[in-house]
Structures are given as structure tokens and as C-alpha cells.
Length: 399
Image 1 (cartoon, rainbow, N blue to C red):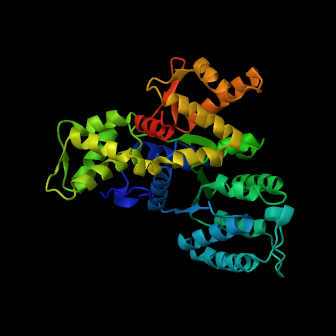
Image 2 (cartoon, rainbow, N blue to C red):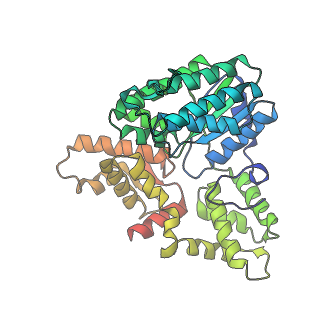
Image 3 (cartoon, rainbow, N blue to C red):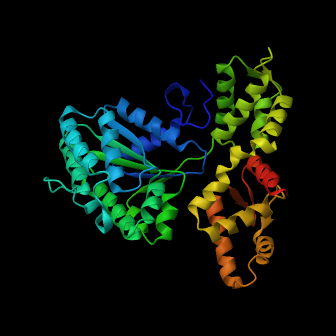
């Protein structure tokens, strides 16, 4: 097994998650459509790629499309049809896909969608709309023999792009209702999974659109249990002719505090890089300590900056600033702080804010930081869930 960091893994490089995968497949067979919510860097995309692989092993079809850079509904339709074309759907669908793609691509950059959004005419003799092209295709899937799984990665990122356009908020609402209609209308042969680094649930709640996803079954994905984390590290070392001594693998997990697959891979990569020029194969505790220190050097702190950047992307400027202030306080003590201490700590930065309003904002910010994996609540206190992330934040803040 190769140690691949930064990009999704699949096939022989995917590890574990057998129970979770079986549960997801059971839900899909029960006609559920799934919203996967999970902390960052837990391996959502890799996991869904594995679900797609297993789904296809059963004789069905699956496609995973990343729509982070799709700026509008036309770009989404083009990405969806292209992805389906590449997934090898049945011959009976290829002609429909090809015709739809020609119309969509001809309209790209030429047709201004405006407030009509997915209902906009493509501007040719067909009198079709963006929505009707997609619906015609899914209607054919419904009449066919094979089931189709469509996994959509980073929908909130596309919706954020869309929201910035004129009539953006109305188009966001229209598009979310359109996706819900697809799920309701073509529910025999078509299944959906939604995932992303920004929570779709939070996005719709903020905009009063929660009802557009209330048909989705919410599932989560956690970090590796300790035994699975140890087996993962063992497999990584074995793949490079190395092995752990003096329980160094357990020691690594303890130092992390929260064994995110990505962080396990990151530390192992750092260990291996340091040992590449030697003929040693034994990984001991000293090597683990050195790897942690290397990762936290000033020139390497950018490795973890996505945790800060995501707050800016997911929240408004004011809420992101409050979340960062809370994290700046909490990074000073491994045991964290209680809510009263946090309120006192941030109050001086908000002298003109009503105390009740500030209390509500702090509560909401803590809820989000727990949900996204930054913090863990325990016995009336909040603390960093990951020791590595806490130390990064402490050094970044100069605390």
C-alpha cells in the first residue's frame, strides 16, 4: 500500500472502513440518498470512491463528480453528463448523453441563465432547458435495468459561486429544489451521495433552505478506531520495508490524540522522508518525536493552514473572526476552557455587542467547531480534538 497524501486514494491504496462501507451500501439498497457529514481530512472522497467501486462490483453504475469549480447550472450539467459518459453507462444512454452534451457545450459561454437558472432555455431549436436535459437522461435510467449512483463532491462550493451572481440567492434556492425534485422523481434506479469540505447542512440552515435536503439520510464518518489506526500504520510501514519498534506506532497515535487518516499519513511521510537517506528500517519513538517537530517548524505550518482558510470560506467575516478568537484562546491549554472563560476572553473584542447576543454567537461558533472536528466538548469544557492541530494553532498564534 502506498502512502498518498493530499489526494484521494482508491483501489489497493484504500484501507479499512469495511463496516461503514457495508452500512452505506445497505442504505443505498433501501432507496436512501445520503448526505455524508464528517470532519475535514477524514477521507470522505476516498471513502465514497470505495463505495462507488463496491456498487459497481454489484453490477451497477457509479460516478463521482467534483463540482467545486462549477460557476453555474450549465457548468454543472456539463460536468454531470461528461462524468456519466466516462463512467461507462449502458449504450442506450450514450446517445442521449452525447446529444445533451452537444447542446450544453454549445450554450456554455453564450447563454446567460439569469434568474431562470436551471429552467433557462438553451437557446437552440430544441427548446430544451438545462433542467430538461438532465431529467430526460435520468428518465431513461429509470426505464433501464441498471441502477446508477451519482456522488457529488463540493456542492456548497458551487452554490457559493452561484450566490454571488445577480439573482444568486434565488438561483441557489431554485437549484437545490431542482436537485430535490430529481431525487423524488427518479428514485427507483438513481441514488445520490453528497459530500464536501463545507457542510451542506450548515449552508442550507444559514439560508433557510433546510427543507431542500430533508429527504437525505445523514451519515457521518469518523477517524480510525485505535486498532484500525495501528493496523493502518503497520500496513504503511510494511509497504516500504519498514517496521515499528518500542510501540512507536501506538506512541504516534497518542501524540496525535485524534487519528485522522490524513494526519497519520502526514506523520509517516515525514518519518520516511527523514529515514530515506539511511539504511535503517526501524521506526522508534525518537523518530516519531522528530517528525512531529519537523511538521511544526515555521516553514511547514502552511501544511495545516487549510483549517484556518476553511473558516473564512464557510463563515462570514465576523463569524470566522469569532471562531478564530475562540481557537486562539483554546490552543493555550491542552485541557481547553469552559464557556464562561471563553466568553470573558472574547468579550473585550466586542465591547458594543449585547452580552446575550454574544453568548448566542459563541454557542453557535462552538457548535460549528465541534461539528467540523476542531474541538471536542467534555465536562462543560471545550478543547482541541487534535493535539497536532492545537500545537499548530498555538505556534501560529504565537501563544
